[in-house]
Image 1 (cartoon, rainbow, N blue to C red):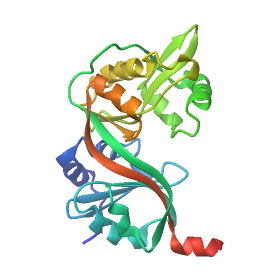
Image 2 (tube, one colour):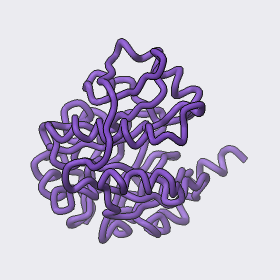
Image 3 (cartoon, rainbow, N blue to C red):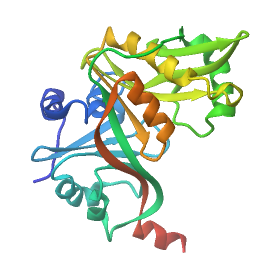
Image 4 (cartoon, rainbow, N blue to C red):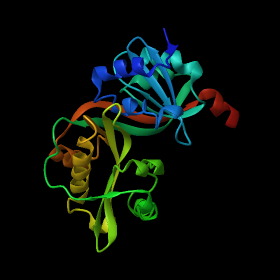
Length: 255
């Protein structure tokens, strides 16, 4: 039976059964993210709707996700982005159609200390303008929440006084001891030199002091990125699919 859950301790206990797979959700229990979340459970399956971005995002992974989603259908926004276990999105039909396919992704986790060379300096709110300029050139349209600069968990590499590579976090929670790396990029003129790997390793060293689980999401077909993360020591702990879903009623209203 689907139920709404408001008890963070209960949610943490469910999610910690596979903390590496559920690192993002565990982090979203933190006070920093909690006000932007709505939670549901069906048995051991947990679903999170995150409202901290212009388009709501649904996260649901693991066994029995299809049962959870079937119950959620009447409660979901008319349009949302989703991270779901492979094939689980079928449970949303026919009420929703898949309007944009983000493709298969890996969830990766770092079990020990990071391997290989590391380089980078901490970034903060004072670096926002320079960081946004780098993203505009190197990673347009990325999912960047400027509030995350306040965590102190962004690391950058400069060459000639200019920011040319960066690695940051989507989630950082010392309370729940989890972090999720994101927004990793290198300026096009400086690619092919291993800077993304070096700056990510430097961030991992920084995160290891405050979190036990260091995770990330990466497109399954991004072979170069997957290989770089493996060299640091990350391993694949699960797969999922990203897509935008639109209610069939909403589609009809636009016709």
